[in-house]
Each structure stands twice: as structure tokens, then as C-alpha cells.
Amino acid sequence: MPRFLAALCALLALALASPPQAARAQATAIDVAATRIDRFDVGTPAGGRYGELVFLGGLRLTSTDPAFGGLSGLRLSEDGRRFTAISDRGHWFRGALAYDGRALAGVADVTREPIRGPRGPLPGRRGSDTEALEIRGSSAWIASERVNEVLRFTLDKDGRAGPGRRVALPEEARKAPFNEGFEAIATTNGGALLMVAEKFLEANGDNRAFVVGAKKPFAFSVRRTEDFSPTDLARLPGGGFVLLERRYVPPFSLTIRMRRLDEADMRPGAVVDGPVVMTASLIQTIDNFEGVSAHRDASGVTVITVVSDDNFSRLQRTLMLQFALPD
Image (cartoon, rainbow, N blue to C red; front, side, top):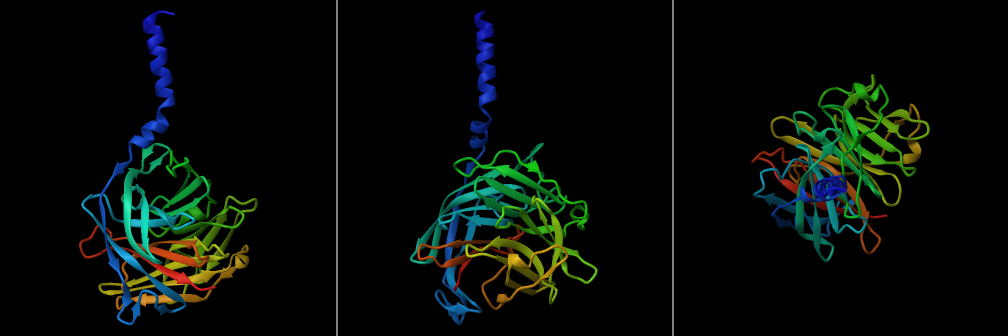
């Protein structure tokens, strides 16, 4: 074989083998500063009970990286020591969490990289608006509410994702209103994808929901009360789900709440409701919470973590708070 042809073949082989390395090279290390939050409100210090939960503490996160913020989906590792988040401008954020006893104490080793779809990096808030994240094993799912699209990703051993592939959705699910689609996704015990809409309503005013990827996909609804809109969903380690909801009345009224939902109630045509475990307003330390995750700590207690979307506004904050859910 001529030398130039051998060299050409070698370059071609390198190019074909290089996408994983190229994908890893796209991750950018960023500095994120964390300020501890030791009180949920005047009467609730870390370790204090609030509603049905126990406030464990939290962090306010800031960064000089202009792309940091807009965190709209969150998942922690099974031990709660690492996090993966997505922003509505189309970025993955990954990093480590430090603890002081049971309380969050800081973040470290944070990286940022673009979320890639079938045609390359997603266009961000105006063109896609990535709002919800689920991770299970070596798979991840991201829902974009402006285009009513769900992508599925394969994760490598480090939790890094290649390009996403579209998930086939029921025709009715694709009719969700612009910017009011699926902000809450999680997987069922059987591994199917559960999707709850922000403000895609049934005729009776309840939130529409779908289970897709199952042998028999189906639609149901989640009871909507007091005009709270779902913003995220997470599977609880002990079974069932925690649903994060928000009610915003301009210009200064913001309320968030969490409800428990039972998977056994989720059947075709059913209306699912569940008990409220926590409601908080601006009297408490809250912001625009749009991401929720759940894991068990070293003692076996279920910990719920929420993160807020600051909308890249100087008037809002990126907060990460944790609560224990007593069994």
C-alpha cells in the first residue's frame, strides 16, 4: 500500500474512532461558588420540620460563567454525592456535592457542555427550551416544551451523553400548547416514561399526563388545584413520585408546593391526586423551583433536592435545597 494511502486510511480510522473523545473534549470546567443556607424561614433552621418534611439546608449557587443558570431539570446520583442538571438554554451541568453532616456544604468539579440532539447542539430557550430531565441507569431523557419533543440519550461510564434520539410520542401529547408542555418527567417502576404537562389541560381543568414507552402507552390526568402548575417530577426510592408545583401571580406572588403521587393510581383515563407534603411562599427561602430529585442518604432516609431556575435574571437566584421525607 502506498504511504500516502496508508496515512489516509490511518486518519480515516482515527476520525471514525474519535467521536467519544471529541464529545468529552467539549466539556468546560467552570467555577461555581456556593453560599450556605441554614434556615428555610425564621422558625425553621436546618433540622427543623416544615410541613411533612424536614429542612436539611441548602446552597445559593453563583458563577462568573454567563451560561450558568436557568436550571430546569435535576438528578442526583443514588448516594447524593453528584448532580446532573440541565438549563433551558441547552446545557448539561455536572458536578460533585459536599456535605457537612447532613447539610449541603458546597459544590466542586462543575462542568458545562452543550446538549446535542440528532442535528447537533440544541438551539436553547427560544428554539427548544429544555425543561425536564430523567436519568435511569445508562439512559437519560430530556423534554423540551417549546417543540414538545423528548430526546433519549445513552450515557457513558462517566455519565456523559452522546447525541439524543427522539422518543416517539402519542399524537395527542404532541398537541400540547406552546411553552406549556411537559416540564415534569420520570420513569415508572417498569422503566416507561411518565410525562406530566405544565398547563396542557383536560376539559375539566386537570393536567394531562401520559405514559410512553410501555407495552401499552396510555393517557391519564393529574388533579390541578389552586392553579398550581407542575414543574418537575421524581421517582421516590421507596415507591411513588414527588411532584413539584409552582403558582405565580405577577408581580410578586410566588408559591411552590410538593405532592406525593402513587404509581398504582396511574391507569388509563384515571385522575390522580395525592397529599401535599409542603407548601411555601416568599416568606420562606424559595425561588422559581423547577427541578426535583430524590435519593436515599447513608442512613436510609429519603432526601428530596430542589433547584431553581433564575431565568438569567439579576432579580432571581439559583438555589439548591434539601429536605428529608420521613417514612
